[in-house]
Figure 1 (cartoon, rainbow, N blue to C red):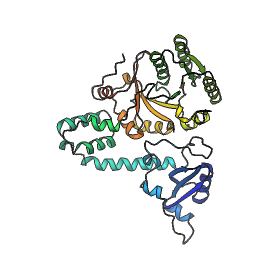
Figure 2 (figure 1 turned 90 degrees about the vertical axis):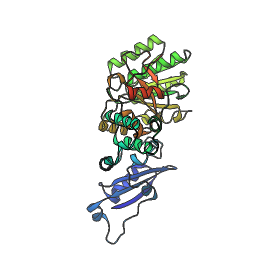
Figure 3 (figure 1 turned 135 degrees about the vertical axis):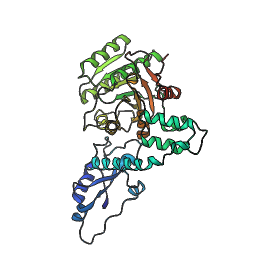
Figure 4 (figure 1 turned 180 degrees about the horizontal axis):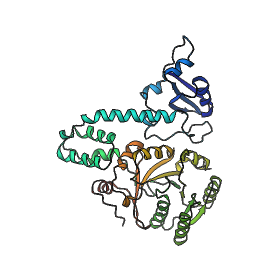
Length: 389
């Protein structure tokens, strides 16, 4: 394998150097940015490397960053870390570079094979009945082998431990509310049909209920969908909240700037779903949410809405497209429509993002609950929906 490190002031320049040096079959191993300089470690395997390598030239050694990651792909090495900007101009990272998809698929395959080999070693009968029954229940709920392995490792040396203790470490919580999510702009993102519009309304209504003096503006950036548009406008009129529409990125920039100038305390943005090949980081950068005049990126919070009945393969693609450098949390939606809730643990372990709220039921009033530990455990183990007072 030929491994080399390239540095330049912009991602496009680095990719050009990689294409020229290693060709289109190169695989990106690691990407870092420091003081506006992009450093990328790339590799070329097998016959391709021999064809492109001059005779007698030794192969380049991996950079320290690549070696420290043990050859893992960027997603595995940086799980839970915010995605950093990938250009000297400060814009959000572009779509994954060439070769990333192949490398990601290979790493997923390797991980699955390793877990399959390790699974017979998980002798659950060595655990006390209380712990073993809880893990077996989570397996039936769809919790993946990687999470089960971590639970087993934490419990096997402490027969008296409750399974809730390691679960609490694996599933971080950050209950939605003014004090825990003080950002002025609350962005609601997620795939089509995940319940974004309902969550946007429920959050806006909750803000007004908790603080009647709070001036709320709801920005509908998914204005091409007729039903959601009418619903948002209707509830804004009923609740004395401002309503703005944006059917394009330029209109979204204008709506946000206008809402800021008008002095709204909270701006709730309902983003459109992203089709395959589009990325949330790019959309936010194009909308100017990373470079707010007089503000910082800390004034933007992104809530990713997900229903728990997506399959693992589908969720993997969604999580990759919706990575963002802004403070983020997960709102689990359509809980009343799901039969199993194991994906809540799987996504937490994959992203390290905190759960912020639980959304459920057909109504819009009292159907968004800031998450609490007892509430989450009852949902996971007893399938009890939250009660909002």
